[in-house]
Length: 159
Image (cartoon, rainbow, N blue to C red; front, side, top):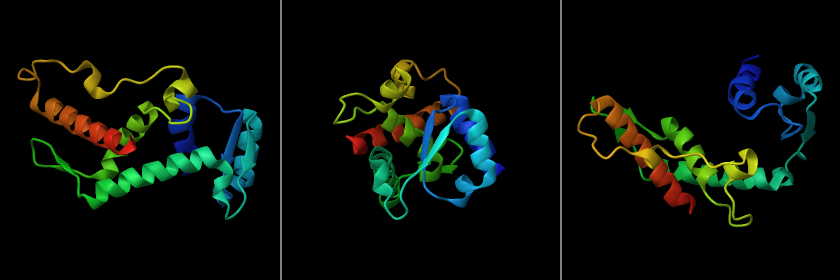
């Protein structure tokens, strides 16, 4: 049930119900619960061939890129401290990595994943940066700065 809630909260709530989902053969997705749920949603579930994840090449390419970026965050020990000294490491930066990836042009299509999927490109936190940050609350400024650094770093590594 936890996986179903994550699916609802992170996929259906932002992308809607999909016509087709390609998945590995994890028991979570092959169970009677999931097959019934997909049936009710009108979603066709296709499984990649065991030990041949390249069957879903686009997804595998994206996963490889994300893993590479996260590995770089770990290798280079990139972490950000806010004004209270709290450390934010790579785990907390995954949403920024995902956002940067979704806004980066694909070398094959020349379009961003977000544009292909949603029809528009998302804005990064720096796209509407206010010029005078002196009057901004320190915690908001630190959070924004952490967000900006994470997005900029991920975007450099994607390119």
